Length: 233
Image (cartoon, rainbow, N blue to C red; front, side):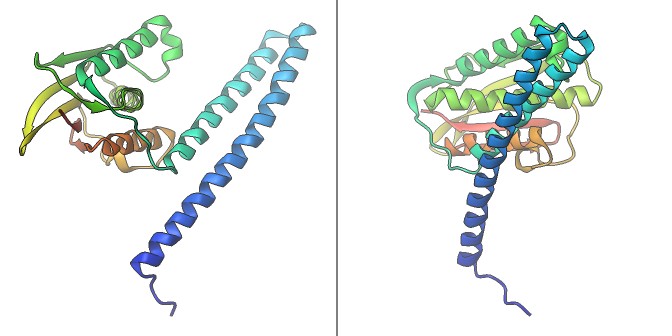
């Protein structure tokens, strides 16, 4: 019987597997870019020869599918690397979340057909106190947007209508303070959405949790509530 790997050997094996996976993802993305190049060339040829609209629509859908797959591969590649944050002092979580909500609501209002599986709107309920800390505002905003989009999809999967409510609170944490963000999704998802890899949406949520953890915070699913904790100044 083959002996079990030691903890050190197991860690090295996982690191090697992660590096190999990232390289495979890069190679697949390069192949997709090549396919997209040929598909785009074909679309332009078809547009010049006045092909039927249904044929043009098919090639456009093909290109859109290639773009989505390339984006998913980019996300997987990002997950394979350590998160490098550039925190700045005085970043208020209320302002970050307000920007996330505005972006999502604008997307929902622009054209409901492009919103896909998303319902809405997104509403923010925040305490009056400042929720400022040292955060990488760009990375953190991307993470909180991914969580919010995931929450919107979960609500729609449960055939719910109405607003997605997000609450922001200031709570004591030992000798310090922490900002608490909660998404009310109404129904338990049945699994830990922040540590699952079943599809691109799950990987996106896991990457968001990784970014939160890189800021010294935590992400958890507590029944029908998604909860993020982040240390405040």
